[in-house]
Image (spheres, each protein chain N blue to C red):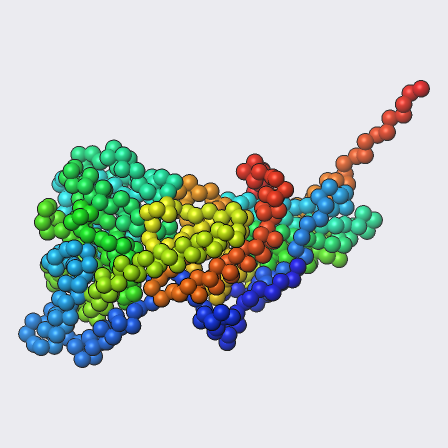
Length: 422
Length: 138
């Protein structure tokens, strides 16, 4: 069977319906910078280039002013005060600082940490390291929809628990955890609550007081800001929370994070937060509309496709679907003018299928068949329609190639088949 | 990871996709891999019973681009060979032809296994003794 796969040559940049190719739809991996953010940052590279810690001259003051304006903007987006925002090199560092910093600071109080199996590696790997140092870590399972069971959390907290760390929004399946309820529970039990809010801040409303958050990680490059900069929120009141620094050298950021501040990056983060705050209500509605359009288009025209994770508690721009009988990497190859990602083992560095999908109870075969779409600020309806068409035609083509699809159509129960080992 | 031109070619224009009658004595079917591993290949051969020459081959694969290319190439290579000649095909030949990177070598191994499994199946069918015809006693 010879088919005309539309492998776009490099020269052809525009599709039939006018969309520019390739299309970027992987906004959970990173986002393009908003031009307004870049414009805000530019003066801080060559004109206002001073070290924000240089207290004695106008170059330093200019840098400091840029930083403090950004600090206000970040704080405002999440309902915090400026004294509670520390700048870091990104959410991975913020996660490390939060978890290791709390563990160190409160080690006399206890050595038990609770997290969830679907956390980002920045949290999981940090917890694994703490286990090596003698801390005890509980990894809570999640339900089929991806949400943590609050009763599981209740049961897991004991008198040695010093920290609960559960992400606000999952990067693979977009699922939103019940952060306010988790925070309330932790507050009642006197346990510090950290949330990795990398994928949530700027996309859904986040308020550290209404949601009872004590410590929170923020990333610029997930919200149309620059890479290499992020922030950590650390509560100062009701209760006061402290974290031990993990980087020493000069005592910047109230002693919590030493190092010369990345002034242009921080200015960018601040502007990104301001734009998100202003645009969020309209934008999240628009993103959800496009996401639902993509979902409905695909599900109306293909059978045996399964959405991974709760649709009700989900980021507006996220869609994670498994296409039965079709392997993820081969699907990506067929839509090579669209940038998305897959939970297939073939696309991961470790050759393991997505651990997040596994945690939902999704079988390995469907994990291998999953695609993550991350719709963002700069995607259009025309792009959505193009992507839907490409996905559908590629899935149909690959199902014609698939022995599993053939067997399923013949009525074979694939779960009963004894597969030959490789 | 970028793919070699040959892998892209096989992916876009796979050779010999399809199915043969599993029940026919001239057809050998090899089904290897497992859905949990992300790779399943079905390779079928139609063998001339007199000459043992593989006259036709078909495949279907659930797997990545390299897996599809490896099995497509396998069907091309076995056609026209005797079963003994086909058993000489090594996964390393496939790796070389498709310029597979180390992380994809297992795809070529699975294709070699699929060829062997198909030949083994065909041979098994031939060895099955025909039921004896018992004369009815008058």
